[in-house]
Image 1 (cartoon, helix red, strand yellow):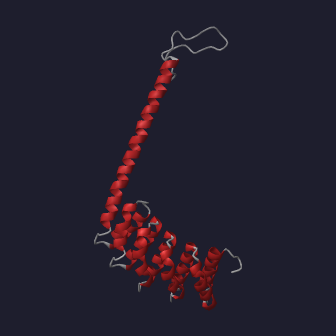
Image 2 (cartoon, one colour):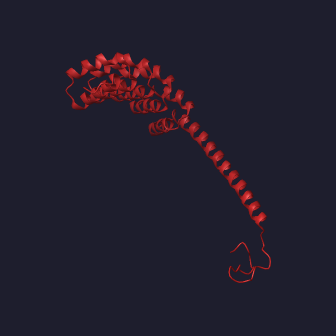
Length: 214
């Protein structure tokens, strides 16, 4: 349907013109302005609704960290790691003491994704945890957070009995870029038999020293 309603079509070559346009140019401009304002209000409502749902979801996931169902706690810890909200930090720190090793591992990784320095001290004890996944998750997260307090506690993991933990420790030390780790990394590569771990150590040494000869 044309904006001109039932008016006759405009003729470029002939002399006929519409008897009367139903909408003037001012009407069109006014309508466009009104439509723009309505769209702006709609977008604002959409953003407000989205933020409200986000707030509700964060609260729900924090509550589910204490649920008796292990799958619920796992899902909540993973979701909170992706929410980029500082309110998730303390509940995730509490989840590091969960009775299930898998929940503690996922909570540790979630804290690494949030990169909040409040998690450093609570993560450090997990570096000596009997569970390999807890050690690995804590090492990875400490590397992501990037706090130098983690350097010394990470060094013993270069001799961990599990190669994936040794790799996580080497990667974390490389991310920390702290010269204090260079000597321990150089010593670890001498006795390391696993190619993947040796590669991780070399990469860490390059990151720390800036030298390419490793």
